[in-house]
Image (cartoon, rainbow, N blue to C red; front, side, top):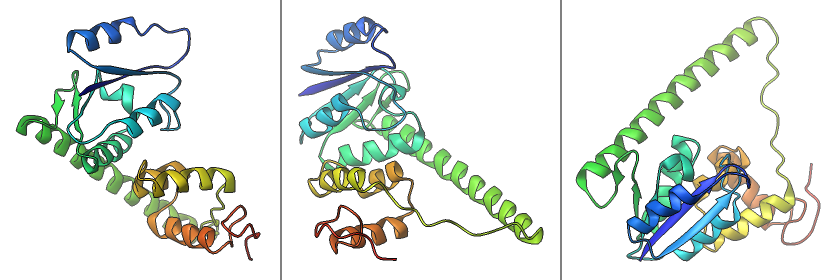
Length: 200
């Protein structure tokens, strides 16, 4: 099945142009969001990700309709791939069904990795400068909102979200994420399975 995803940023904006393109491409089912794409907490997006299955192809006009950053795009495509779903973005000529399309996605991944490494280098330089000036206090412990964590945890365990996507949404590194998962599963995080408050 060909599945289309359409998004505009506000309810006032028109989706007709995107919908017409979907019809011309023979899309069987369309999911439409009229909200910001700043994260993946969009109802129609979540419904679409739960709906697609092995053999389907997800089609978007541009990947910016699906994701607002290269990192988000790669996380989403990773999830689609794990479900056996192909991905097409018309504007950027990304088509995971073709060698050229997969190459484009690889290039996007390389650019993201380069940008991340540059950011980490700048961050390390900033920390070194702050330490030299006696102003560095270290990182603060990340305490996630328990209700949000539970909702995301349930989606992760149901296979509707990858661990990487959950880490991104919560703003956590992988080690911090897995520590919080352990806290949640042992009841040490507020709202965890046992309902206990987190320990100090």
